[in-house]
Length: 159
Image (cartoon, rainbow, N blue to C red; front, side, top):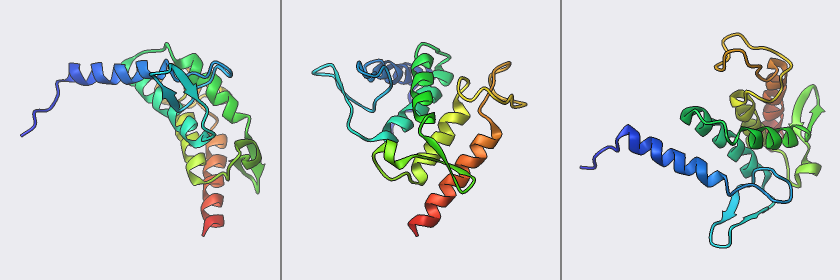
C-alpha cells in the first residue's frame, strides 16, 4: 500500500511546479507560454492559445494555494493579452478565432472563465461580495456571464 505524502511534501512539490513556470515566460512577449524546453532553456510558442490560457489559471491556483505572489504580474500580463481577444457575438463574449489562430470553442471560454474567477487582478470593474481576496476587485459578473453564453454558443455551433 502506498503511503500518502505529507502535507509538507505536497507543498514542496507544488512549489516546484510553480517554480517551473518561471521558465515558461516568453522572452519575446513577457507572457506565459505552455511549452518550455529545460535542456535548451527556451520557451516554445507552439500556437496553442488554449494551453497558454489554461496555464494562466494553473499559475493562479498554485499561487493562491502557496500564498505566493511572485508570478502574479505574469498572470496579469497574460490574462490582459487574451482579454484583448474577447469580442461580442450575439450578446455573448468569445475569443476572436482570427486573433487566436484557431476556432474558439467551449474550452477556450471555460478556461478564460476559470482564469477570471481566480484572478484578483483582471477586470477590476466590479467588486464582488465575498470575493476570496479581501479588498480586491474581481472580474465583472456580466463579463463572466457573457463568456459563459459564448461557451454555450460554441457548444451549439459544434453539434
